[in-house]
Amino acid sequence: MLTLERPPSLDKPDDDRRPHAVIIGSGFGGLAAAVRLGARGYRVTVLERLDAPGGRAYVHRQDGFTFDGGPTIITVPYLFEDLWKLCGRRFADDVDLRPMDPFYKLVFDNGDTVVCHADDNAMRDEVARIAPKDLAGYDRFMARSREMCAIGFEKLGHVPFMSLTDIAKQAPDLLRLGAYRSVYGLVSSFVKDPRLRFALSFHPLFVGGNPFDTTAVYCMISDVERRWGVHWAMGGTGALVKGLVNLIEGQGGALRLNADVARIEVENGVAKGVSLKSGERIPADIVVSNADAAFTYKTLVPASARKRWTDGKLDSATYSMGLFVWYFGTRKRFEDVAHHTILVGPRYRGHVNEIFAAKTLPKDMSLYLHRPTATDPSLAPEGCDAFYVLSPVPHLDADYDWTTQAEAYRLRVEQRLSETLLPGLADEIVSSRVVTPIDFRDRLCSIKGAGFSLAPRLTQSTWFRPNNRSEDIKNLYLVGAGTQPGAGVPAVLSSARMLDQLVPDAVAR
Image 1 (cartoon, rainbow, N blue to C red):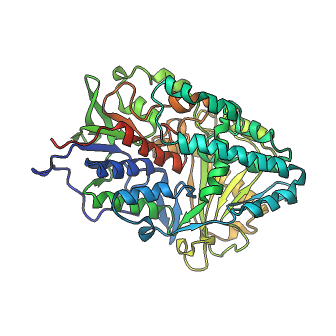
Image 2 (image 1 turned 45 degrees about the vertical axis):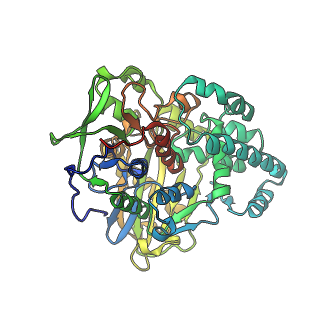
Image 3 (image 1 turned 120 degrees about the vertical axis):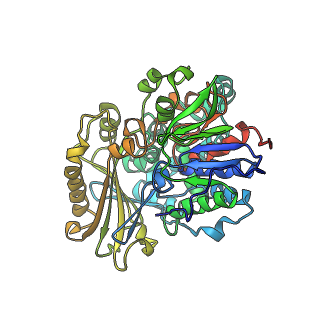
């Protein structure tokens, strides 16, 4: 667990005339925002309610195993490299990032497999193997994905949408590319094989979206992976968190752990600082919330200060699915299991719709199995494996009692893995930890226990999402999955990058 050697003082030195930026939360968005503001001359204090930084990227250590709490892949390394450059340092000197090839192995219910390769030619060979009639359509889809990436990520991914006019300017390109369609709908217009349709459309699930109603802009993820790769940080995602904390400390910034914010102090429509649940008040020139966007407005900002993001508007919004995550360690290594495996259930549309629309727990399941020790044995005792298996589930609007049913569901997951990828699993487990949507609600302050805050639907994207600069409160800014541009590590880092355009330059006072 990453802790500070000494708690940094919040007392402002007599000769420190830098304006003070307080950041609520130490997820990737909050840490990246701290680095960027520190580089622009702000005195930065990051407040984290947990006992270690990271937010959804918190690291669990038990029984000699290291389990990354959240993100398991890095797809756009230059967004991290840029943060190190702002501090005059080299990212590669602090973090050993390894490219993955293949990216993922998909295992279907009937035993069919699709291996998603990093190499273009190898991937085309895989498409030709499973669906030769779809090869030309696959090529056309990848060309469209590149166009989507050029517009949706490279051109607009770091640009804040502050008005409907900003959307209107981009509408012709987005309409031309089919952004009004769903990811699955656009993919299906290019390829017919159901296995290939899954392989090209499942990515929204990685950012909390239903592939059948998430805007087709997210088809850009295929190109993002192809161009910048899928990577693993040696030592786990916690190595990235530790590196960012070191950057902040090197800038003279402060990280306070176990600092639970009770409210953002707003006076005459201006954020003036925060109050902790301990009663301590911390004044600030600007406040940046990396807490869940809906939680920020519903809980930390008084209703009287909000006109756009009222409780009613937030209650009627559509939220991402919940997540059931089981971390476990085994006394043996399963050498035949890839670093990233997606175990696909017998249904796709019906399964996903039950989770997102019906808010019911499906009787079948699709699972994402992460075996980091395939690449990085240091995360487990010698001769052992560390695993993370994720099952998408409904958020807490579902009528399912995780307080009493979590173990029953874990046993279902264990059985599914035993029957497919990990024979004899039950006899090999030596460490276990379960996380449910209740943990996301209570520990990570995520409304409805949603894994990724607001769902990435067309009507909840760009300007329709909470803006990075609060629409109602001066000097309040938002970063993270619930604000623009959305969820996923690249988007969260981009939300912090947007502050460069929105936060005024630091001026000594």
